[in-house]
Amino acid sequence: MKEIKCIIMDWAGTAVDYGCFAPLKAFMKVFSEEKGVEITLKQAREPMGMLKIDHIRAILSMPEVSEKFQAKYNRCWNEDDVNEMYQSFEKHLFASLEEYTTPIPHVIDTLNMLRNDYGIKIGSTTGYTGAMMDIVRTGAASKGYTVDNLVTPDDVPAGRPSPYMIFKNMIDLNIPSVLEAVKVGDTLSDIREGVNAGVWTVGVITGSNEMGLTEEEYSQCPKEELEKMKETVRQRMIAAGAHHVLDNITELPAYINKLNSELKNK
Image (cartoon, rainbow, N blue to C red; front, side):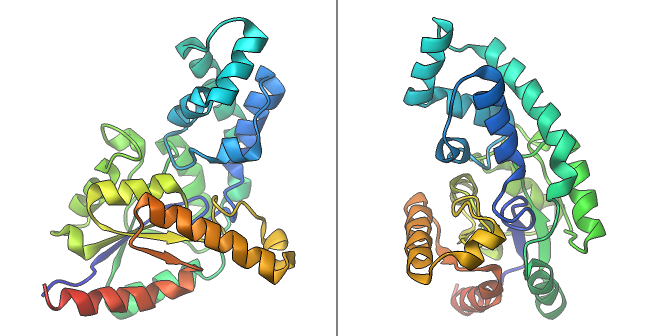
């Protein structure tokens, strides 16, 4: 009988780094401060979840950003610019990354319960490189968050939205069917990765890049405004292909129960 055997978690904005601020701040420094090409927070967050050098390409490819680059430098951007900006991004990210490894509330308790009560394995994928994840994984573990498997874009032919990191998790954890795996993430890149892999794909709103709020901002936001923001995020994730969207991670066990009930008939 099929049942959910594996949950494949994203890291920043899903498991750690509430609001996904570590990469955001590094991208803003590189574009707006160093390169002199002003970008908005929305533009910086839009490709979040991709391999970071691909993220830089995606921002530069946005028509408005591309026009600003052309106006400042009297030429189109090229791969030399991408590589230069990526080197600067890495410098800023590595300098601050350890500060952004705190687990998001309820993640540890929820996943430990799924491990202990359901026997579910916890895999993970990321837009960070292996070197970046050495810092994140160590920092998160020191605060109580661990996974059974980690795959980075360095380990596969391509990062998100390609499905390879999910497939490698399934191989590493001996998961025989895509129907027995659930991908959980906070970005549209996460959702597309899960959809492309053919696994159950779940978005999570609270703490997400898509919401883009700190814990303090979230707690102080007027209820009506907060609900509108959540609904906007929910619809974006559904439009990207999510099978289900969680308000927060504590709702995951109930969804696993629902999937297991459905899988009894398959």
